Amino acid sequence: MQYPSLIDLKDNSMMAAALGLWGAAMLTFVSKDIPITLWKAFKRQFTTVLEVTSTQDEFVAITRWMERRPYSKKFRSLRAKNRELSVGFGRHYFFHRGRLCWFFRDRVETKDGFELEEISITCVGRNQKFIREIVDEAVKETHRSKETKIYIPRWKSWNLLTSQAPRTLDSIILADDTRDKITKHLDRFFQSEETYRTRGIPYRTGMCLYGHPGTGKTSLVRAICAQYDLRLYTVDLSDITDNELMELMWRVGSRSLVLMEDIDTILASHDRSKKDKDSKPDRVTLSGLLNAIDGVVESEGRVFAFTTNHIAKIDPALLRPGRADLKVELDVMTSQMVEASLKKFVPALNFSTSLKWKDGITPAEFQQILLRYECEEEKLLEKLTH
Image (cartoon, rainbow, N blue to C red; front, side):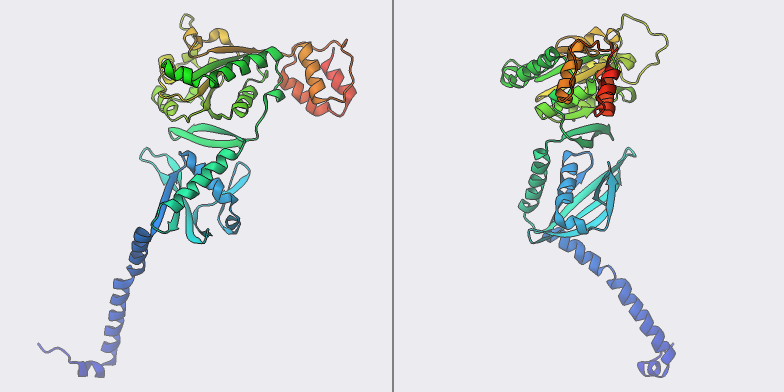
């Protein structure tokens, strides 16, 4: 068999063109991965990468650090959350202290089928020091903020829900002896860390806040967090298992307050000596709840707070010392509380101390009346008196 020679190919323009196109296609196919390969080699050899998922505290710190940088205002991908704009999904390039970096945000799926967010910061350079300084700066900026950080369970871990402006204890409508009782207990607790350590006692304390709805139990908890610079972890026991609760307790940060609201609505918390035929079994059990509270290792200044409208329903095991060291009843406002609150929040208001104030006003009701009629003195007093 005789193959065409180069001279023949020159004479056959169609064959030469076909071979040329074939050669160009082969060259393109072979070389198309070269830029990707070179880029991967460059990243591997000459960059440092930090990866953080949304279950970690650093996720919020780094995201907010990025939002505070002036160059983030030029990013074209944004994300709205809690009425605030944050850096959106995708890759964002920027220069920090003269060094090229890029921020990447994406969604990832776990083995359990849960969807998380993941961010990464990549910096040109092989030394970890530069990227560690970014993390330290981000964490310090977050800690300098006086806002109360509120966490909720998500994906078997804790996720930051929001940050709220601090609320002082003085802004909560309480009887003076109630406020003193709480602050004395917590002051003594936070000043006694060494005593707990030397005696081998887990460094934690618990409080049970009970009383009528609207008496300010949740507001009081948030004020306590602001007063003592605590992070707030709030968990709904109606939709959780024993194992999930135990895992969450292990992940609670140090110097934090764990809030379990309306604990009387959970069958597991009810007095075992009483039967409630109409109740349905809950996912969490009493033994699981007790183990989660007692089994926290290296508590490091954790405070547990239970709220309930019906303390009589609660099993005594949850209320014993070590789990509820302080029990505080929050009741409707007394005449003295109404007068003291008016003097504090409406100092210009003139009223007679002989007035007969309405019975059964809760702090929540008082605040609503005050907000609505603060500038109408006659109507304000009319709503608060008989």
